[in-house]
Image (cartoon, rainbow, N blue to C red; front, side):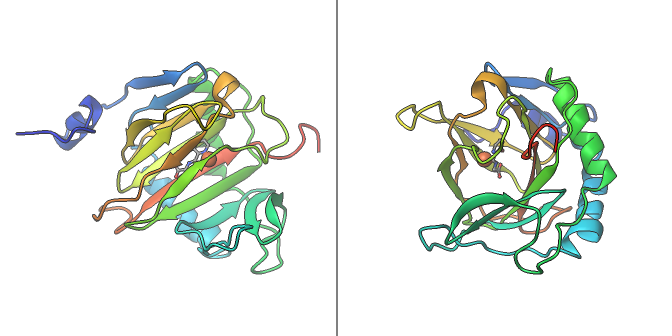
Length: 230
Ligand code: MD6
Ligand code: FE
């Protein structure tokens, strides 16, 4: 059988139905892909997402400060939510669509994120924000830095669910050529320290359907966005 250029060994093992898939792919100092680490928790995370978060803060396409509608649909949970509008990018304690606080972060989310951060060497991670991204085929995220958070000492934990995507991972400046990293259902990227401000993005999602999410990829990114002591 021929394999796609971007398929790695973990992907192959997953397709062949091997139970325990867990390997690590270092992306450089401070950034690592933990392959398949969310597979056991995926159904729970998705159920809690639907029942505890999306029921109160439904998907929406935000508009960038430049006036473009984002192809990725978003929601948030936790004390702070990431928002984009004509005024800029920021963290806001309220959902601008409802005027109410974002839904609390499900206990399963906070627990899982802290476990993954610890597994990558970041002990004591206590996220106060979870940005949830939904990609349908064709949706993409252009190269950006995550720099709206207060404290760059804290890592980001990113969980990929549903359809696979190609993650672009660049460097501290835009000039740095971005590496293409395939992310599959259940993969977790933990990202901090010297990599915390590296540019990254997601290539346009390919067509497909996944048994747990249907025709989309869902990404959860956990952050500590607010001050260390609120
Ligand atoms: C995504 N992720 O994977 C978009 N940011 O859908 C991000 O923008 C991201 O995965 C910071 C750290 C990890 C990420
Ligand atoms: Fe990002």
